[in-house]
Image 1: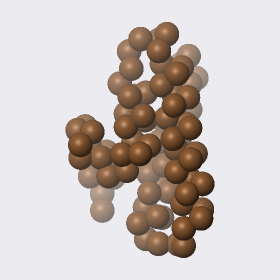
Image 2: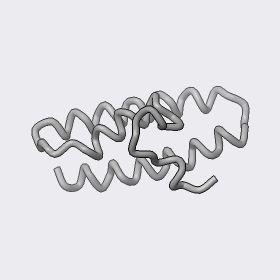
Image 3: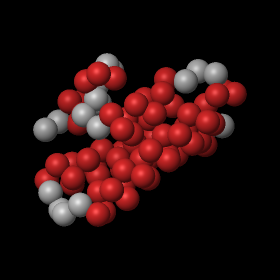
Length: 83
């Protein structure tokens, strides 16, 4: 599966909506006063999901999601550098 299919612009088409919605909100937030909270919300959702994935048995889908999460964490780090 290509990474393009994992990053959809429509929130209804998100493959991992539990954490991708708040992540998408952070990516799209233009108000610098709101951005810090959006990033915090995205990080919380991502790390909660990572905890769930750690409790699950290893599966290919879980591995794919971990790879997508790693990319999301990198993107959030870039956003935080600009705050």
